[in-house]
Amino acid sequence: MCLKYDIDIIQLRKYFQRILTEEYLFFMNQIKKHLFICTSCTYSKPSGVESSPEEAVTLRRNLKNKIRESELKDSVKVSSVTCLGECQSGIAGVLYPKGEWFLGLRPEDESKLLDIITKD
Image (spheres, rainbow, N blue to C red):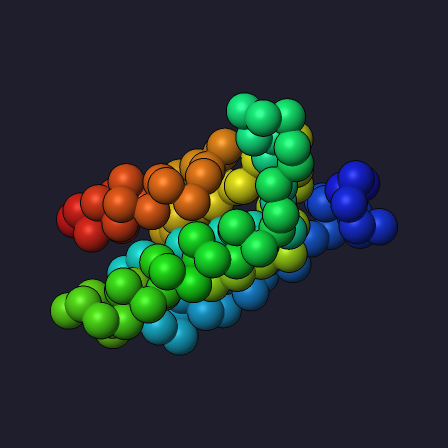
């Protein structure tokens, strides 16, 4: 179970796998990469204060806007997800179709993620 939400992570992952499979079958000629950012994750700041989930929301929003403004707008998608089951790791993300995970993300990792997304 996810500590923040009363959901079964295994069922959630099965659901996402089904949705992603359907989506990629539909968009396989257009969408080349799809990044999911957990927008409920938080992390402990150096000051000891817990971050707000709004930081994850902002990270996703900024990435999505930069992709929309680029030539990749038709081939890369950035979406939010409520929980990826990695709450203990801070802000989490996963990039499909590779299944590449990013744990412990911070808002300042935006440029690093953009570089990874824009690589072939």
